[in-house]
Image 1: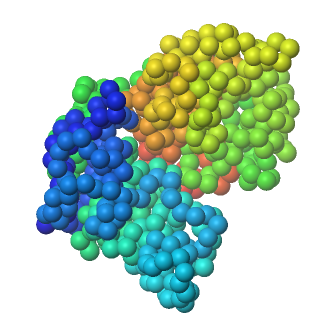
Image 2: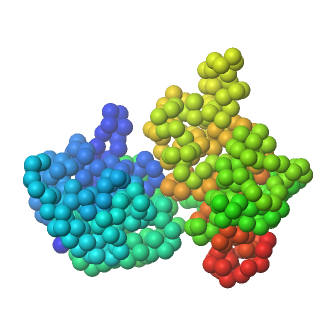
Image 3: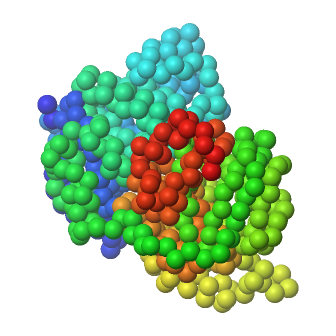
Length: 499
């Protein structure tokens, strides 16, 4: 049975052709993946299905019925629900209240049956296998548990079409497995799901079919079993991407950073011994909670060390704050770029110079001409796609936001660059560009520590790999000896050999 069919959909925003004749079909009891680079039209397609955007041309059929004008209210009534990457819940209300607000009917002046609300919430949570109390406050729930609350709410509202937008972007491997279990159970119950993801490696595990979009155009639909990662990439970017990990042989210089039994009790990190040389990319691998980000925060002075030593260029240093770190030549691009990497409301020019304000100010007044010259230089150097440096960073794609975050810290002329999940949530084309930039920076003598949860990225871009488990480095592997199996053995605590 066909739940949803879009035929020859066009959507324009001024002179921008967001969708150009896109067709799409979703069947009952299937997971249909939609892939494409940033700007391919995925978000616009979702909003058309959800009724947030009206198509300029084309037809929409839901359960065999042609819909002349779809709006968000009608979309929900027809059984369509969208689960976005960031759950749209009220954080200070309980789970039962959040579910009830979506499902309750009637005017504002009515008596609420709280016992029934809790009973219904518990029933829906059980349906998606979520061991969550209806009384729990949403703010206290992890991201994956909030996603399950949203899915439970959608099912309670009679959702037959569930759209999952980058649902695993912030999840650990165990959390991904639990989400996939829920998705499979919903598929068996006849729910149709549209699955948006940049993580191509997970699609064979969960998707039945895949549709590829490129530059707003429909490229094709394939059975998932008939395509591999390489073919999907060719369809997505319109060219061969033979070097997603364009790593060349490193020419190493002097040791830039050494740590000697470095630790921080509050962060759970202890006994860290490692070194990074100029021109080297040191990959930092491990499972979620292993202490990788905590180590980065120690090195950058966000949570200062309380034991051990940090040695930069053969001199012991005390780093008690980010100001100390920047002064000593350390830069840090954090994992959550939208919260800590860039200021979305500020233009590209201001974002690229935030870390060097003293250099572009005199007597407390900003030199806007110098700010513009610096930012325009990084736009050219890093290939940031933006109409001008005056555009707010929030208007750029995820990959270009990441480049702006990188530019901010490169402006400080660091000797050591720490990158935490540098390509998380960006498409395969942007990922290749960021990897190329990393290679170029290393070739110029920059020492780089790269934290990544993607083992292909760790293996593809690292000269050496340090593996963490429970706050310690439990193994150090050369590029030649590293394999996914060896890294996972160490990450799971199978070995206790300190680096």
